[in-house]
Image 1 (cartoon, rainbow, N blue to C red):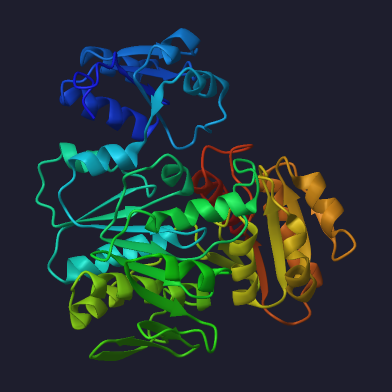
Image 2: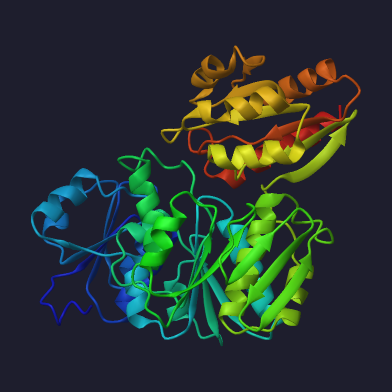
Amino acid sequence: MSVKEKNISYFLIIGLGASGVSMAKFLRSKGETVIATDIDESRTDIAKELNALGIKTEIGFHSQQTFNRAGIMIPSPGIPLTNKFIKTALDRGVGITGELDVFTRYNDLPIIAITGTNGKTTTTTLISDMLTACGMNPFVGGNIGTPLVDHLMARKKTDVIVAEISSFQLDISKKFKPDVAVLLNISEDHLDRYKNYKAYEASKWSIFKNQTSSEKAVMNQSIKGFDEKFSKFPSTIFTFSAASGTLIECGAKISSEDIEITLPDFYHRIKTAQFKELTGTHNRENIAAAVLSCLALGADINDILKGLETFKNLPHRMEFIRTIEGVSFYNDSKATNTDAVIRAIEYFKNNIILILGGRGKGTDFSLLVNDVRQSVKTIIAIGESRTHIKDTFENICPAKEAQTMKDAVQTAFNAAVKDDAGEPAIVLLSPACASFDMYDSYAHRGNDFATHVIALGKK
């Protein structure tokens, strides 16, 4: 990995978000020559901080010459590999790597790595809580927000790494080999970054590609293509499934009432009704995956369950805001793809006013048609995709456009009160889209929704 060992001129960090900044600092701390570049001209303050550490920065522009002369490029996960500067440098033979492989080079602790289209953050947090209840000190990082290399620079006592992993991180990983790898689910997402759905699927499955018989794999047996895929991996397989008749010998069977864990010489039944913060089939899947992951690492089931009992639901995931005049408002801003929206609709079942839209990611909104027809009374379309959404659903249910979140909340409230036929009405922000047309993040979007709901209640 060393620049000096391979006669490399420098590492080029592309993008100065949290992961890029941490990577630049870490490599510099190892004595490497580092240059960092970001097209965003507002990154001047962080550039000064990096400059003080001896890291050259190029802010507000990209130089093809800087890319071409690099020894190894390390792009932030949000930057596509089709970026013209990266692509030209790759064509000229410049190497490329990412956070996962750099971390793998220096890490000496066991890793539980979690990926999937939906549920990653919830499951990652569950595993962390469970391991903490077992008396361990987990470091939680990756796509969840804290760069993994921060652990390598920290001085805190840590026993295990719990890492949320995105497909973008996996795409440029060649050596990442988690001790326990978890695949929660796969559904349509990020088709603006992938050639097709098959390529996106392959990215998710690649979390297992470097595992050997010494490692463990936890996977959802209900994923399409499971029967073809799982037999190709040499690792010890643990499965979970909410579908009937799909459980192999080692894993978790999920019903509406409980989760049955069956391992060699081990059986335990978890009653799920008591976990009010984790309702719905998708959350029972998250619980099963988290429990199996901890068991695979050798944790005790009684301590695992103590961690489960103390879990608190995360913000922006079907988060109840308040009820106004019989209308209940829920913030599900983290639902950035159609599968997540379907899960939310299935949970609330009917009388839903759905706020949908944002920046599309090659999203096929027609995947929602059946669920909308059954459960949604009105759609409020927002963001760049609002016209597309209105065109998709206007023959299914009333579909109205809103220019701002304030307008969307008020329009949704008016529709809920007008359409309510005596049943409790639900206003659900579950956008199926990225937030970056109107907001900095899904959290920013969810907070804005909550602000306008609370203001609505004060009138």
